View: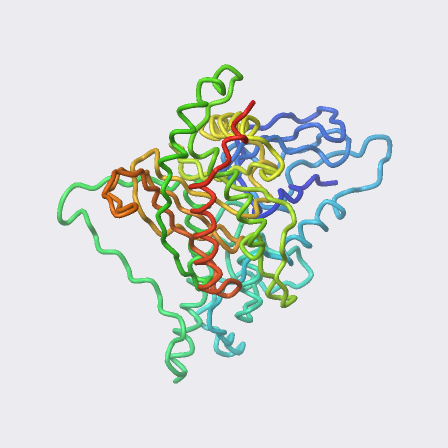
Length: 431
């Protein structure tokens, strides 16, 4: 029987094989690591779903594999029932329930007699296994009326990616045009010029993480009508609190930063405005409001942006949040976070203050409906009680999904957030 790659969690459907932890002839136990897989965000072992003796290893280091793809062939231990079908079933279910729709105009497939331009396609065999593809690709194919079995995947193991679907659609358009069809509904991407004609160039392959970021940002940009609400918060008093209590926190092994205060205030603001702590289920026509507060913190790493999640932020004190934030950020930069620590977020904060950025428009981290972007606080001249005085102002940018949230709600959210930062209760700093 074959042991297949099980579902990996929310928004994760594939990864690259970093190492193989077993060899042919090994006896493996249920739960024992088969391979180590890099999902683009983390490296973690993949456990065996059932015991047995390894008879064949079906992947190699560097392969990109998808949920449901065979990893090992094993001889069941003690006549254990075959688990290959069971291992594949959850993958099929996951593939059939993607988080994000891709909104494109529907394209009718050509009739059989119009397919002379498709001689290199794989056979349309409905009895064979479904082709490997991400949930978002499968969802898009359903919406466009495209049979993925007719597309030849270009990734390892025949996995179908967005490039393959685009190429197939472009060929559909060419066939329709050659038969006198109407105007194309999807424009092919323009071919790049040969940049080397004008000077030296260097080509660098996109890392797995960069590909994940590119795909998810494209999905978010295509699917969500977004608006960004800007505001400045006066954090002069808050910064004074940080300096006044920072030493006491350091003695307890916790580094008190403005971000720690912001986490606490954001959690309180989400409780007042639960619409921002939600997701849209388009298929069911529902808005899912989460009663937990798990906040993702975008971390800038050498490999790219990674968003680990802090759990139950609303239930933790400042010292606990400070310790967890420092630990999580450090392990994220070292790529030592587990896959479960990258899932389940209900709201995201992207803080560019450490780099020195100001206002920006953050892209919503689907399937969430809002994200808060923070810049670096700067001293500015402010009129208070008729007098001009220097104050530390923090630039804030709230991007939100206009399908779920209206402009008035967004304005009230950022104003309440600013007020919470400006009137933070010093009693919460006691440890």
